[in-house]
Length: 129
Image (tube, rainbow, N blue to C red):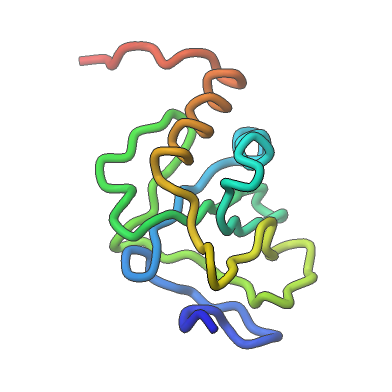
């Protein structure tokens, strides 16, 4: 059992950066990325009420993260985690964690989200000074 998962019937706020980092993404960008990742996709938390997905990835992987339309969630960030049995359509697992796979490989996740973002929002423009 994964020590950070809450018991059935409860949600738990878990600090990112210890067991995993997360990348917060709006549904419009995250769903196509999850589909594109297919079997390479690790755990994804879905919050239907706020229309946000949290992709779990390796702890420390979001340091220096810059993908347009996404928000890195590393140390100092907390993520609300549903129990594995969550059936509530507001907070549940789009892709549940397994003992063999919790997070998506950071390089693979970055590529899938960048491709989804470029498709939906267009290429990233240069930074303003």
